[in-house]
Image 1 (cartoon, rainbow, N blue to C red):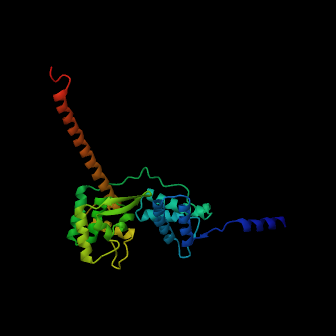
Image 2: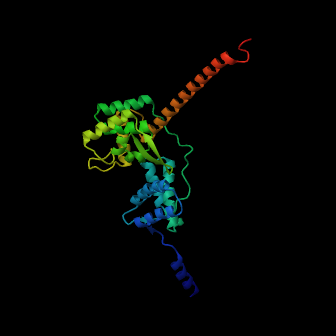
Image 3: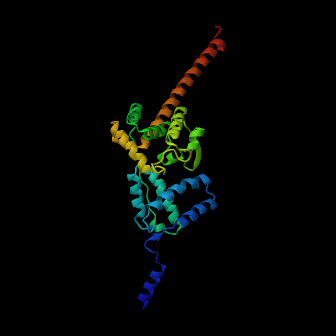
Length: 282
């Protein structure tokens, strides 16, 4: 009798093995973040990650013990970096904690310190552009340029909208901070010509034939195909390498400017020394 009572008590108190998640619950969680004082920009970063998690779930929207591990593996297959995959899982972990199901969280993050990203050279980048132009792949040509000349992430590509092209800047949200990224004049002009040619008057610049914003896998697939046709190493056939090219280029320019500034400062000091140096008249 005692064993039967204990079994019945365990059945009543034990949490179900799986959890069904509704979009309404996701929205309530995001609202709770605002109520707890989280910045609006931070919540805007969380929302697309939770949308991606929700769409990854099966049709019945049930979360099992291995769901987050499977999702993380899927993110890596789609080309997300370990660090980005970690932030996606962290957002989902927060949702599960809010729903009282910490037992379904994925504990432990991927190691990002040893991640080595191959660098795309300027010559290889120009070869990509030349190949895309020769093959008539204008959309891919422009995508390559957007990543390499603005440094935006692939997840931010849909923020490149008609209005952004008109204004010459793209509003991005990095680590919860909203900031504008300038579109170089040469790229702005090419994007404007492309928009007129294909008849896009509003919304995202890069869309499918049906007018839907391009998915990450589609973007990565086009760039991968272009790299193959341009005979560029397959390890470099992703938007992250183009973004890294932007970062490296900016770093080198800043270093060059710093050297020129130091040289100009030294020349100025030498001229001042010749004029008013202590031993100038001796």
